[in-house]
Image: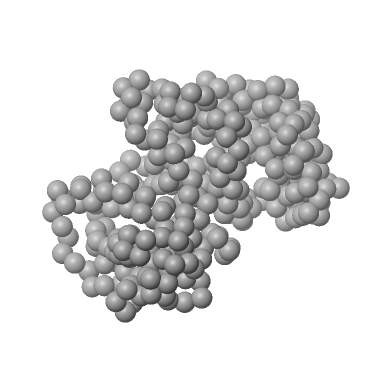
Length: 365
């Protein structure tokens, strides 16, 4: 950001302004939490849905969203200054391209993720970030009295919000992964910790000759059956109740860990990887496919570097750069065999260390 400053005028289409001094840029960065909560509040009351059919005066928006007109005008004015919504005639507001993504009824909607980002689940841990900085330990349980996923199970409304947000994120990344890597190389795949199976269903739709196994906890696997049936791939899926710290189905050609390892510290992540390695056995053609974010190099903006702080405060997990991925995988007996890109979600293809000699023909049978 420091090297590409044009202020909010870049986002709104106004002429670029002179670059503010460093002190002003620093203060703007530290105002991010305020702006985030403004956008969260407008998402919570559904302003973008109200404006879906066109611009409206703030008084009418307020009536439809059951909000105070003056307070709403002030929040919309702030959001419009950073390109989320735009003020046309005085007091008349409309959607921008970013505001379109706050609608609940459009493909690629980010509303659930914005609501999650503004919720207590994420907001409160950042209030204790200094404690996390001093101790290096997650702070979530200190605030809420239980670990993150235990809290979600005990609080269905929070659990439902998290589930919707993660489902949206998974849908957004699934196409990227399927476009970036040829999963059709393998006759069968195992999605370990695959949740309700949206990614595996997409993979099987893309590659009709592939069969899949979904492994997750009992209550999740039960819900996955409906997803597979709805997507028309149930006849090519085996649903298996299991735990990625326990024994996994053995003898398959590819094992997928999608957005699993970043939830865990290196010790626990290595334990999961060793379980996968045990299931792969000595097959030189078997592959582990880690679908995760690889952090960008030093001094380069990457949203993953923000998500890394989420992981630290919430679970004690972490996002990793390529060197860290190599070290983690190596500690569990794996080596990377492709060239994953940095600063993005990507596929890290791995084999057991020393597992050589497989031909491409062997791999796809």
